[in-house]
Length: 312
Image (cartoon, rainbow, N blue to C red):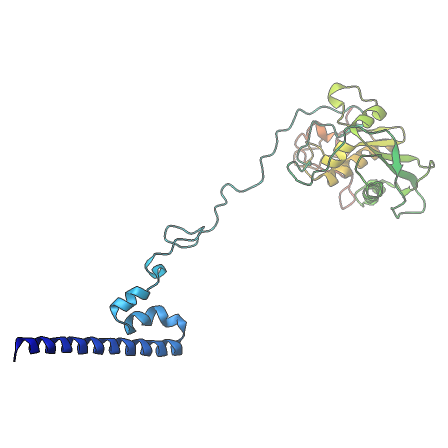
């Protein structure tokens, strides 16, 4: 056979071999398609490399399949999910208390700035004006109580930001509480006119100082008082509580009312009866608890008077 014919035959065999390879590739691809259609797309990454030739498989393998997945946020080095680190979580540090100042006779709730009962750091802390016009709005009757009893009314200085009706409701609840002076026989009914024998006035600090005739430097802007038939409640103390009182402002309001009504009933100051015992409502708790625990009520739930040694 001539060299030319042998070359032609080799060329023909190569062409035929290439055709057979292309045919097998097409058949394999068709078979893979049929299998994948039957099994679902979830089997693609597993079956496709086995059904197609290596070169075709490599060209179709997604890059993500060859790239290690990155750990998700909060996962450990091994990729396992870790609990959030709360070692630094918690409330903001409590501000340091400013020096306490002693109350004068008939005053309660002195203190410089917010403390335990003040809710410092809360975004809902109310705006507290330091002064006002010295005129008052009288609360409508909102307290249901006995038909007889000492008539009282509630007034709030204009612009103080406290709803008079809400203040009256809170004061009425305090006066009617089973731990209050009702245990001693005191009864109260709300009125709106001058027949009131006891008037509760929520006033700005500046107005409170004028009504209470506050002259002691460290009491200015800080105290509540009773003067005659008026209980003057410092707006600052009503809204923020007191540094020495371990409780929310709403509980400290009960101490203000009970302490000053106690004076109106003729009771004097008392002091701590012993470590760990409730501080009497007639104790000047702003001066320090002296081992007692904060307490806003003259009586306990069993009707026992929470007394302490009288202060000369």
